[in-house]
Length: 146
Image 1 (cartoon, rainbow, N blue to C red):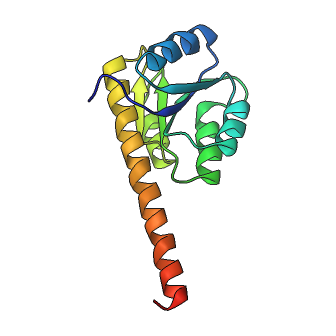
Image 2 (image 1 turned 180 degrees about the horizontal axis):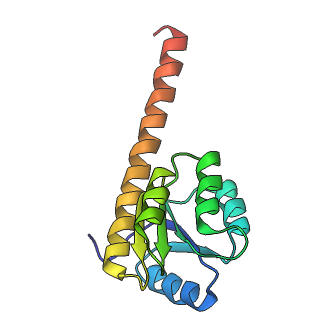
C-alpha cells in the first residue's frame, strides 16, 4: 500500500475525541474525512454523497451502529462499511457481516489494518462503479442498435 491513499471516508462514532484523532491520522495520509457523532447524521450524509468507505462504531446512543449500517445499506447496497467496536462478540460481528458490512474491527484501532481495509473497500467500490458504467454503456449501445 502506498504512503498516501486518496479516499473519501465517513467516520461515525459518538466519541468526539476518538473521531478527531482518527480523522487527523487519516487526513495526514491523503484522505478526505467527514465525521458524524450520531447514526442519524451519518445516514443523512451517506444519502447526500458517496464515500469510498464508511467506518461506523457499533455502540452509539440513539440509532446504534447496526441500525446505521442497515439504513445506509438499504439506501445504497454497494456502499462499503467497516464496523468498529470496543465490545466485540462473535454474534455481533456475524450479524454485521450478514447485514452487509465488509469488515468488523476492534478498538483500539490498529491503524495499518484499518488503512488496508479502507484501501480494499475503495478498490471494491471502484470496481462496482466501473461495472455499473459498463452496463449503462451496453444498454445505450443496445438501444441505438449499433
